[in-house]
Image (cartoon, rainbow, N blue to C red; front, side, top):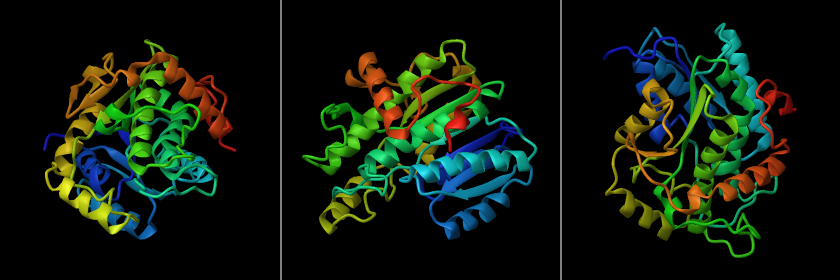
Length: 303
């Protein structure tokens, strides 16, 4: 395989299974160094050992974090910086916000947030903010957040953005995926056209993964298994996502939403600039961050 990413370093959340695992393998095979993130220490160790054998030219490390906890996300940002320093690196070439969850029942995190909102939206929002200076230290860098076609039918209820009063798992999931696209739109606007960092939201398509099987009732599991049987493989989906993460030629692209390596028009609600700005401010409040992007000291708010 032609080596195209030698000298590049990427962070991938949810890297021990599914799309994240496939993306990590593609990047390592192309010569890149990767920092994978997972919840299970055992699975992280297994993946680190497996990937390290694929390409001796690249470096591989895995870090553990529970992305439903903001303290863990902040610690993860510090751990990423420490890992780069251990490799004598000062910059990050890309961040793939891939980790996600689906919960049929209403469940709050220890921080008091609805679980899907915490993992699918707040975690990538907060992690991106924390590692932004590392991305800006690279000649050019990429933020890719895995969204979903579920965002097309979704809307944000500003009076109950976490759907606590009338919870529905599918509606909650769609709301987080809409939030992913709005987040992408707003961070690009705040960074500005001349920024060396570009953000994209990726639609992975219908993929054969286990996201709908974890901790959900039997009927939901059965429906998910039936639905995913018609999906594409994680490897096929990951190709388009890795393209977004690594292709320098699309750095100036105005399209925020892509599917299988091609731009796609998002929903009308996902293009609402006022909604994007409003969501940004709400997310900053939930994460205890200032709304302004301070490009030199974002990590200072990781305490």
